Image 1 (cartoon, rainbow, N blue to C red):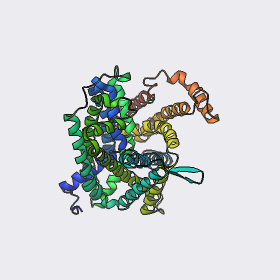
Image 2: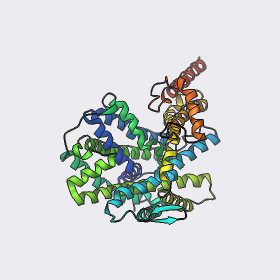
Image 3: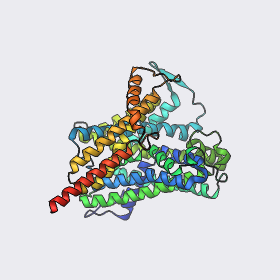
Image 4: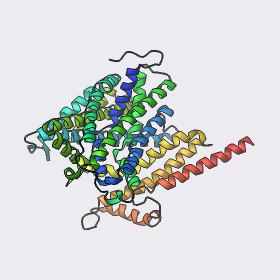
Length: 470
């Protein structure tokens, strides 16, 4: 246990523990899987691709945490209550029980446990559902541990920040050292979009971590943890949250750089790999054999566990504040059970549903982070917030509809149902105009209109200020 803080001050150990905890919350299995694959595809253009990835996978989450600190957790205060609540609920459900949290248990099973299980084919029927027995037992145990750690939020700093994360860091440092000193091959050739646009491709690939959305959740969770540790002054909370953000960003950058290098030097071990997880597994198995498999299993399991704890805790805190009649402990138990169920039933369908929703909400989250820093420069902050986020949401909805229409189109090119036909019709009507926007094909048609709206609100504000001064 850390020593109690005094006079709104934290010890160096507590501050490092807070930073390590923040780092562990962000570092899920997806963060370990995306960089190696991107590094393999980038090849000789790895430096630019890696820079782009770091901008969106490290820079945006860092800025998101600082924005939450700057706004004292009230990043949506300028929005109408209904809109703010709806946006917050959507973010928490997507990053929590609907997608990200269940995925941590499933990926921990696939990479951290499945290689050591003799028979992974045993199934049983539960009503009309056919469930994998080993997967069910593992995810139940995984989310039971998650629940026990999340039930005591005041102790998260000590259990995650001072115990689990140092172990995880030691394992990651060992993996990174082996990658640097024992590269599997020479750096390969860039392929696909990484040949001509490595920086842009790296930036877009960084969105896959979804950590910008998570930063809005984790920032508010950390502020609550600081209150429970006796840090009551807003200025002190801001100071320590920003310090934690930089520690977490440094840790994430360290992991991503080493994993990008691993992918770029993968050589033969990457042949036939469909994702970074396979590259990572092949490298560790080749260089370290059974010991390497145990090492990788430990890294992935701890990374998934710490992220799951952070997600369940943050969601429980939020819904407890939204519905005080539901206690925090009840919500932790309830959400842990939901995560365990979803990790076994219909995850593929949920992923298909989540991607269009993410395409819709992610632009709003990024715009929200940006305008939080610019609030003081708007003559009418409330109008600016609503205008900018409305534009981001409008174009985000279109990007989401485009992805949904594509996913609901069969192999013959025909819509699979009436809903898909409706999506396709909307996309067909709007595409002739919106397709002229930069980054339309990459699903980022929202970027230029949102930036233009921010600039207009700033210019309008400057004019108002000058008029008032005159």
